[in-house]
Amino acid sequence: MNKDTDNIKRLKKAFLALEKMQAKLDEAENRENEPLAITGMGCRFPSGADSLESFWQVLKNGVDTVSTIPSSRWPIEDHDDPELNEPDKIYSPFGAFIENTYDFDPSFFGIAPREAESMDPQHRLVLEVSWEALENAGIIPSHLYNTNTGVFVGISTFDYGVLLFGRQRVSEISGYSGTGGASCVAAGRLSYTLGFTGPSMSVDTACSSSLTAIHLACHSLRKRECHTALACGVNLMLIPELTINFSKAGMLSPDGRCKTFDSSADGYVRGEGCG
Image (cartoon, rainbow, N blue to C red; front, side, top):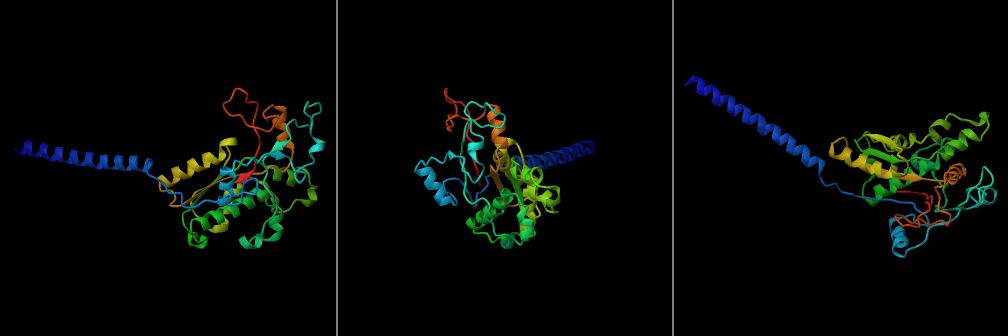
């Protein structure tokens, strides 16, 4: 009789352990598929789409945002050559560009003007558009100070870093040049400026950087690593070097038109923006 009682106790204990383990498995599965809420967005895209409303109008009206490379970026006549007869030429002088890339109010973010001079305009856009996204969500940024809010920034180009280090005299390099020109600093700068203490990372997976940043943000939320996340993608084209490289690799569409999944596809078109 005692032996049977002991066996029953063991079985009950085993069943309780199984129930507990099943509950943990159910919780883990629920987290992996837990719905997430997009509470706010902000954007800065070509054709004057510097708000969600104006971006929607661009999409709704089918606006063509592709143009020739503006002279404010680099003199296209110095590099334009459909035949690529010279080493520094570009056969496709097209792209989608945003305006006023250097407009920035550093005092708004508590940044010294001298530091702002060395800041990659991509960093500036991340700060501005992230603030706008929080406003769009109805969130006062200061209310997230010292919270485990996460930051995930898709950023892969480093044009401003080349300008800071590759073209200036050594005597002009300041104490802010390193952090100002490094893509990896973009996420940390946003977290530091707004006082976030959650995961913070800059993501470079080339053309999928922004999508990967969103994926990592979703994963972090579901793992309870952070309770709120800012997922961002940014890209600016400030110098011709990468476009020359893409021309040499035959990656650009000669007529400035993407023809994805079409038999006439002959390359892509570079574009700018922040979202």
